[in-house]
Amino acid sequence: MILSSDNISKKLLNIIDSTPIFDLHTHLFPPKHEGYFLLGFKNLLNYHYLIAELLTATNIDASTFYSFNDEKKASLIWNELFEKRTPVSEACSGVLSILKELNIEINNKSFLSICDEYDRKIQSDKNILDLSNVSSLVMTNNPFDLDEWSLFNTNDWDKKIYLASLRLDDLILDYDETLKKAKDQTSNQENTIVNYLEKCYSQSNPVYAAISLNLETFNTILEDSMWRDILVWLESKKLPLSLMLGVKRAVNKDFGLAGDGIGEINLKELSNLCNSFPKNKFLVTCLSLNDQHELTVLARKHPNLRIFGFWWFMNQPTIIKQILKMRIDMLGFSFIPQHSDARVSDQLIYKWNHFKKILHPILLEYYQDLLDKNFPISENILQRDINNLLSGNAKNYLGIT
Image (cartoon, rainbow, N blue to C red; front, side, top):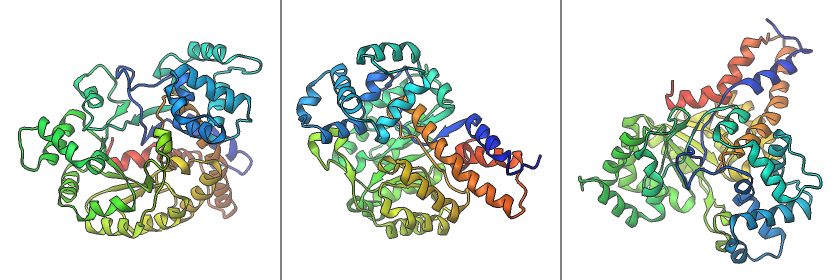
């Protein structure tokens, strides 16, 4: 059925809302992984986006804040950012979006009463996955953190929903300690890191490896023989390497996890990497707004480079609107438009809800323009495109059937 200008908007909205989502990058874990699975209102508030906002907006000392228990920290964040101030930031807005989705009114209610009502309505990851329409997601799994990696010693969790990845940052952050751990876990002392990764691959069946880099560390990937061996190994396994570019750790050390910021990156080196390893696949996202245009140009020039999502500080509605349109103008629909980066399961609800509200009017503008140019748009075309944007593009690039 060919759609008209009058009915395309509603049809597009219905398809966006009903299409299952594959979330390419999260920091989530299944409920059975106790100590790592995060759920609930207190965890939602005690997120580093909101912690950073609290510590910069108030005179609260960071060390004092971190000395509080989880309930007191969450209560303080609620009081300072939602009661004493107007919660207009994206991080605050996300919390309100979840409360609205759960039909929780906040007027004249205490923090504890909101917590109680919230926890009655959200009791498992299944609630979250149903509300967000996320059918499967990729975890961030550090093979050099043996306690975290112990997840793969068990089978009592759904591996069709929670897919694994290999996070390799420790190889740059503390190589000597990481090498020692790898040696302790493998009997083959030659090419220790690759042998250990082979063992981890067999345990976890990852869909990609990942690393976050800045200007100081990017050259390591290009020049170090170990990383060349890793890239050769990844290519043999047909595993993409996800590059998360432009982070600077501990801009404010007192803030802990909330203290990381934006660092420099030279995307000319990314082009060099794509040329040097043409058989490898690279998933790439950049943290700085300044790098987005060059990254999009490179995605036009390197078939083995695929842009994904709006990472961290880029995940702001005003920025997404601008950059999403630029990417479509230059790449069509041949990229992966979003990932949640969620650390608390509940965040899946608001992160995908907010993105879909941005996606609909932007796509509608393009489809209306096609109709104006007498290009027929059918419901099948809309469904095909949305399937690809919310799931297919990522799965196809990863080789997931």
